[in-house]
Image 1 (tube, chains in turn brown, green):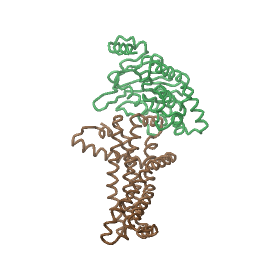
Image 2: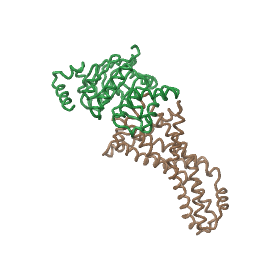
Image 3: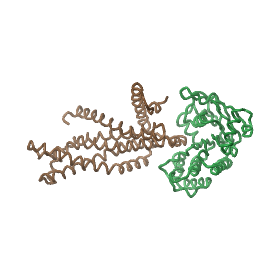
Image 4: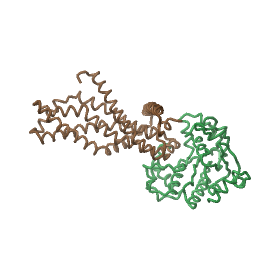
Length: 268
Length: 249
């Protein structure tokens, strides 16, 4: 039984589930190694990468905009009563800004992105697999891994940091709106408080880790799609398991990356 | 005819877990010959094609195309050999996200690196060959089953392959379209002087195309010869197979 057959089997026993889990881990590891092998070999398919970046950006733009705005707004509304208890409402802009820049902006954007993009890539490549389009590409002499996987994963890796920066600003705007509704605070004061609270060092690790999150969202979706078996049912499964696995890996890697950041810069 | 491919298969075996699909197959396909591969469903006909093109790796055996054993080739060398081979999938396998024009342009851009003006001419000429010039800007979802097969065929032959592999080219089509596709395959083979291996269940298709036929049974070649000999065989199994087919058709 080959790897996709093992992974896509139904009604597994506990022993088989363990086997399945390690098969997925090993399959994903091999897939990652193949990505890093292929990404440096020409042709680089720049046109395809640009096309995917543009598509992914357009696809996720509305949902991350709404999410970012609401996160900032709700964070402000939730923090305000707590800060009022301590007479520290002046710290509201800094609280919102640091929370959004350091953690909420990158992670929430990555999770929303994974939900939208991993499932899309999983379904698209899965559908191409079961309808023999990937085989057709391979027999025509084009490397489907390079053309379909490398371009998409590279695009997700590059586009997520851009979206994250955008979401951070939208969330700050949401936070500001919540403040002016309930507090007598000017935009100038809010802006100055944010700028003085957020240092460049807060911004960089938060945005830098989204390169990893973007990569994870892309590679998991591509892996699940590329190894799809079992017709349309397999495509559906690839799509849903992509989201679950990518979200889980994003949270695990977030924990690891925060720990590494604190180890490298103890004052962060 | 010197550049037309011939295929030599020696002692080819392939199994999936405990199921033996191909069992010690030895077969020669001559230059510019049309070979039909018959057999019941699940007897390894498509597996044979996929082994020839390198999509599946057989357990044992050798496959020579133009005197190169494709099983010993690295990825780059295998891709060079594949440039001379066309493959028509049962589902036509058109790229859903691309229009007909883009489907046909894809191998020319990616494999042959042709300039755009030559690509345009080549696409139009190939669509003329399959009589579907009007479909050039349609998406695959807008095409009928027969049109998809024709476009799939056009994409397969656009790089001027010397060997064509057809996986059930008429399955799922009505008898008239099926006959048209079979005649188209024969005409293209004559015009382009390709070697063809055609997996099919369709006797009419086989009758139109075949120079020679083989019948796979339990992983082995149970019969090899011309179509008339095959359909008039005294073997009880073959008699039963073809009488059922003829009744259906």
